Image 1 (cartoon, rainbow, N blue to C red):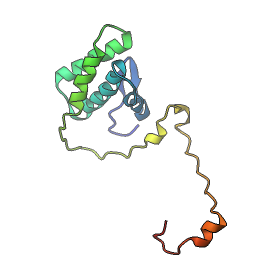
Image 2: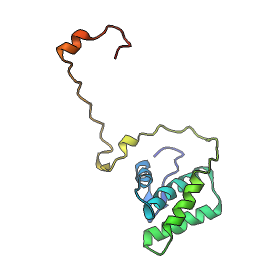
Image 3: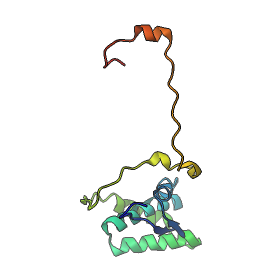
Image 4: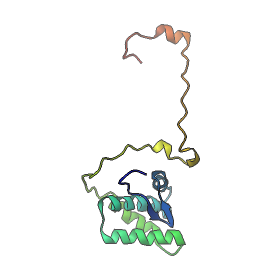
Amino acid sequence: MLEGSLLPLSFCGETVAEACDAVSYLRSKGGGLGNFKRQGMAALLNCEAFGCPESIRDLIDDGSSACAGGGGFDFGAAGSTLDEFNNSNDNVELSFQSPSALPKYCSADDNNKDKKPKRLKKQRRSRKTRKTRSSSPLAV
């Protein structure tokens, strides 16, 4: 984990300990519960990093509990409210250096996230391409 990290967090009955875990929530598809998972995780990260109103924190907590336990909850309305909060365009100066994101390592196949990406084989140019290639470094 990075020093000064916002993780681990508790969300929908799970411990979100790694960035790829958070990214999987941010990639949730669909409306209703899927939208709540996306917007809820984004709002939770925003709250941890920058603070948020108690009403937003309560909404995240209530939805997270319902998500974990299957209780009655209006995920659609909550997702819309959190989407509005997440897109409020509040510009906040970061008090830390943002690390580079490597989303290509966060995939559906998390078993391979620790492996280095495969190198692509170079394509061979045909003789015709080699003969007509320009000597200019800007030629494509």
